[in-house]
Length: 370
Image 1 (cartoon, rainbow, N blue to C red):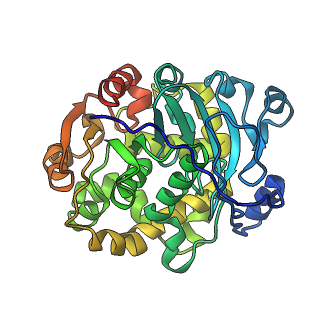
Image 2: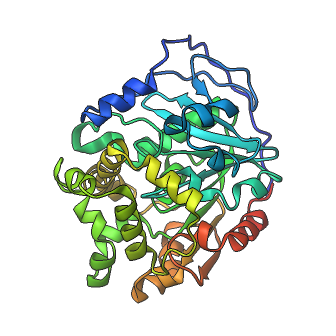
């Protein structure tokens, strides 16, 4: 396959007042959802700051001076030479890191994590690609838009649109995409809604959302209890999750979902997940899961017979799934992907990129080729 040369794009958007993220977090702590400001100016890969889209860019001093906002120096050291910033889309403010050189590669995280889940592979991949690592809307340090009717603003379609706008602002109309968990569901929706943008796709540890809801099992209901729990009306799950320390909830949640313990977690990454697991992120996560059986299901039902056309690679952790689901990954994706290049049942749990980073790196470099 031949990759198009990334196109540079421009816009006549004008600069708007900067949204103060301190006010954003203060508002969400009080239970108020705040939408990101609008803006769509596109810029080159390493542009000078544009006030219409780039709201703030971290410096080395920021990690020492304001780690609550930007994270610690130890986390920054995991992403050497990556730029760390906030970027406006039409519906959110997206926190991202990006760095490296080569074809653009967008990596999307899952729940309950953020973009730091890629820390064991990002720097190596940056030797081959321009690696882009965002926090999905509502997660990590990205903003918390209003949910809208039936949580329409937290559908994977809305999250996919954020990513398309973000990549265009970085100067890219075509790119590789890999996603894990909720990020893989966002990537799947990108491949359906924006097939002209996604040239190759890797989907990690999911079967399509429509298939999940129409093929539930007893084992799935027990292992994926959070799908129905976090979809309950607000503020019930938010208050229960917030009633315990973030570290307790995250570790317990990851043990139950992961299937292989917590030996893959580094203290630096765990501390960053804890820092970001505020009421804002808890609320955003619940909005996400409320959208799944409502607006997302309606969108997916309309597209249930559509296949994604670009080359696809499917990876999953064989030790983190119920037996019946582990056995069905490859067959299910043959129904939803017209060009399924390969599938790989990895001997690990759910958190693939942290459990088997060398294998993930090798699969990515072997698959994401121009």
